[in-house]
Image (cartoon, rainbow, N blue to C red):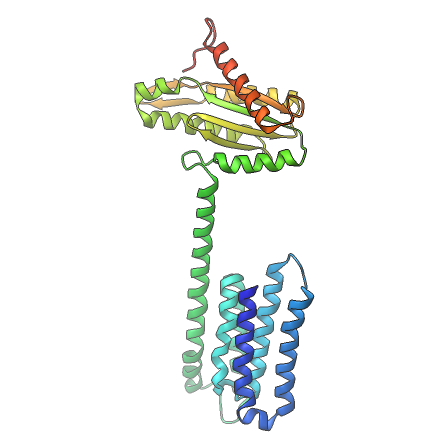
Length: 328
């Protein structure tokens, strides 16, 4: 919005210089002052009144189209399509291309082309159906179309790059799950809201044995397998993260003890049923899981994490006991 204000002021100043210091003011002083005054009041009022709070896109659309209308009016008073202000159309186009996308920008290009034809029809001696006019119009409008297209493309690329950077900052590159830092932020927000939830700590059994026997690539495939199983098992409202190494954390929002137990069973089954194909060998993985419930087990986040960790290692020890299922 600060950039929009700067563009609007620049547009106003340039138009004022042309309208007040040329024949336009001499021939149509009232219309020139009225146009400049209305646009100035609109800029100030839109900032002071803060119309449409929280709806930034709508505000940008209104200001972009208002600027386009102002430029059209300034052109009409200062010589129409022969006015030196014709290139002011680039300002609303650049604003739209940077903030509103290709569709709105393309529509504005069409409106500008229609205005160009309208100027020609209103100018004595100019025939818009001739090749001479068509060549001049293409020469004047093509740069605007090119600038609009390149700016919109650059804006889309920048937005995509920003999303990728934000995604890399929030997710684990191997699994695509949240990383520990982002998970802690989500967990902190959930905890501060006083919501009931279950915290699951999940650890892959005997991953070191897989790494030693088949290499780190096989270990990474096992980590990815467990991450996929977690993603398939939990709800969209829940959160899962790679907590580090072969350990994962899961936040089950609003989960009761019964729901948490059901999720634990589904995770175990999904991991065990999904085999890992390594060098023509089928490997079955398993996981140890510890659960802590808020607020039943504790109200402090550190205490909950400690309880979930202890339960996870207790589960791991039980699974190593004689008669328990093989870990891998």
